Image 1: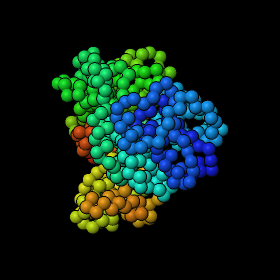
Image 2: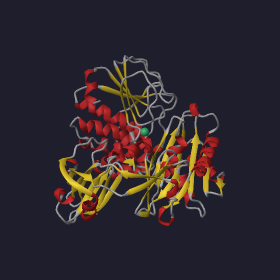
Image 3: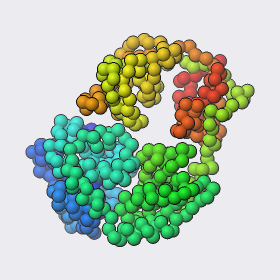
Length: 493
Ligand SMILES: [Mn+2]
């Protein structure tokens, strides 16, 4: 859906959640600006019992001229109400009557009566959604430096000082916004009140340490979510602490932050595991992640829920280090790989030899230098990875058809010296897999974390029903194939 669909309305009210945070303020600001650029008037309000009083937000309101009004007793009934950074009907936003409701949010989607919604729960901030939608309409938020600064600060605060950013669209926004650094600095340095400083101290004193798996659980009073990041970052520096989960429980939500400094636990995976089934979600990357849950979904206290999930998480996996593992292939079945069509890109088609580039994909950013013989492969799931020409020719046969495929985020390459960005699919061609050797495989009966022979610092997770697979001609070439893909790739010998 597109923002311009909302231009058919005349009487428009934008409302963010009660007790607004920087992301909510930035998002509402962006939408109001969009409507004004299109000659429409819109009001931007927030409601609830409390007027904004946090000092960083007061600076934001003043210095960035956020056009928001506090309307606890709002009684008009606009043609269109847009709730931003929250979803109409939820507890954290006071209900405003309206003829039509639209929702723009990045939290986990809850059932609702409106069909006008844009919910991207994979993004770090609602500001990113608004920025992307406005850009799609051909406008540039950088035309208003104050707005650009607000959007940046929205993402900054919602991702724990950008440390939990994982989606490439969030990165694109970070890279492109022209911000006022002085205002950002002054907001960043008025982020914690003296009360919150005390909350931080109290929370840390009451840590729960689990020696067997070296993790800490720390409960804080309800506070600004950034405090959780501060607590978990700090606590992780403790000796013999590999993982830390800091959380708080309020009537509206449970928020938590996860930090890991051990290669056996990916913080983003653990965050998603903790939140699963509890009306929330998690996001981030291997070292830092965060998440939330909805109190309505919990049958026990947040503390008990999180403690239980952690115990289950550590029990659940067996860890395999492929480099020193020999699987007993007599208990596995033999298969051969079916021919597959994949994509590839010759990097010298994109930029000249010697160019320093950044490759941005859904899986993350990679910096490299273009040289003769370096290619990118596009795998069956759309995953992108570098490959050298000799390996490409050994395993695949070029068919040179134009590669067509839809991506949730279209991969692109940036020339790091000029800043020029090129989308890469226009350069992609196809290859077919050559007939291949036998593999042995069996469905997993227990989840595993597999460190392959090539990735010693990063594991791949396999769940029950996925296939543990090993090449017949290399006993250490062990990998995992998703259960739903196995029949597409392999047939029994
Ligand atoms: Mn938000």
